[in-house]
Length: 112
Image 1 (spheres, rainbow, N blue to C red):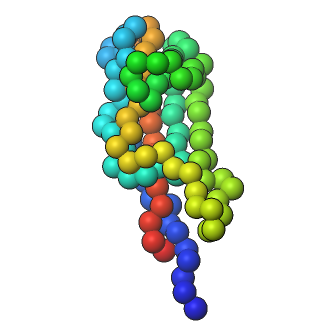
Image 2: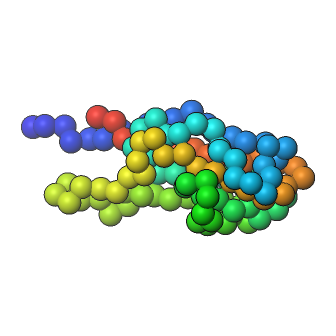
């Protein structure tokens, strides 16, 4: 019998401190090294921040002291495949915080 298990693996934590966040988009660490199955972004700053996946267009906001958790592969099917955020994707943030840090955690699948 074959082993169809997929392990959930983690990339290194990415972060950007408040002093590097301004009214112009700044990259949160490096681009994704693997296709992302789960994404967790924490806004540990003191203001609502705007995020983007292209560094130009506003895509979503996260209030101060809050987070966004995306379980991209939630209704995965073996036949239809599953969604992922592409390897090489980078995320960006802008705003005017006076304290705190933004954290980004990316999770990917590996063979069991």
